[in-house]
Length: 373
Image 1 (cartoon, one colour):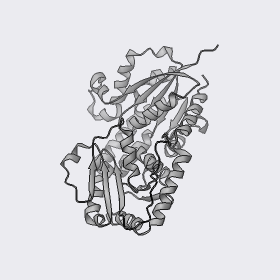
Image 2 (cartoon, rainbow, N blue to C red):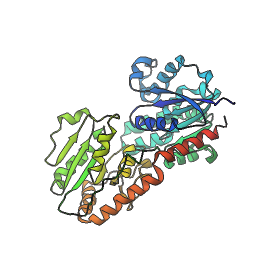
Image 3 (spheres, rainbow, N blue to C red):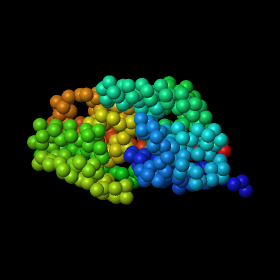
């Protein structure tokens, strides 16, 4: 009997990748085509394996790649037929390994796309100079490694388009893996939203309050929404402990990835998911909101438009939209409860089409098949 090929899954657990890595692990346990091992990389690894402190200008660009390369010194790479790498920033340190081993790169963005997002959200001259320098110096390195990758698994069609347009990657080498939720657990609440005697319940989930627009939302609530809505902010941002929220705002802190049940209940107990984020490549919280049957309002950034379809399950505002525009849209849901109910139902339909664990497993299996192990 032929031995199954063995694949090493190298999984970033930094920021939003932690959620996606857990979903990948759920899929791997059901993946029949290969045997596998996992190697995780989290914030603690920076202090253990940091060896590239010399060039502080490039700390955010190369630090994780070189720390991971140090960690891999303890791994017998030769016993694996292939690699699965979650996180585009890792490949800077894995050029030689990628040349020797068939590799799937799973990423929420590309280098060019990432720099463009920074320039869009930070218009300062300093940010422009930094991005230009990084483009100039890293582009050739990135492209040379990209050419060695066997299969690409972007987490969105937006990222896939950048691979095609910016790096000339063939569609034959691309399998989009959007991430998957257990839709038997992530379910909508069985409640009606038509009774106008009940205020609309707004939900914000994000750990970086400034970048995700939490302060913007709080100001909008103080200015106009507190008479019409309630607001729950779920965050582990340390600054939250010093906030003095107005009446009608609840701040929930301390929820971890091991407490999914509590998080699901919070989604189910609300009606409208609001996230005025200024810099998000993907945002797994949008999938969670859709699966929970919430209408959604956010900014039209990167891949968010694949999880929030304008005038179907929510609304997308252009970055820089005024606070009055946000308030107007939210108040519109308060007046038109039938539209709110329809959008909530449409969110669940979208989740069942694209964001279930079975769909993720199918896409992962396809990506592995393309390796031709």
